[in-house]
Image (cartoon, rainbow, N blue to C red; front, side, top):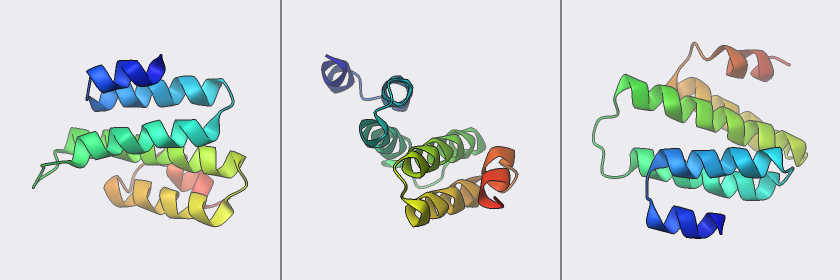
Length: 100
């Protein structure tokens, strides 16, 4: 059912919200898939990403890192945190987690 909703709406927000739902249901692998779809929707066909889009992308990369951490994929989680910090170097959650 959730996948059907996503197929009807190709917005980053729908995908990100579905990721949060999967994350709250302790399904981090599926959450990552939705978060990556959200990132794809933000980045596609964009030569220049606005600062608000970078902020959103940074928060999504952080969520991906958290899911990877739950899956004990430490190196992948660190790479996702780096992506979050590349988008927004001031992302406090990503800074704190990266320094842990």
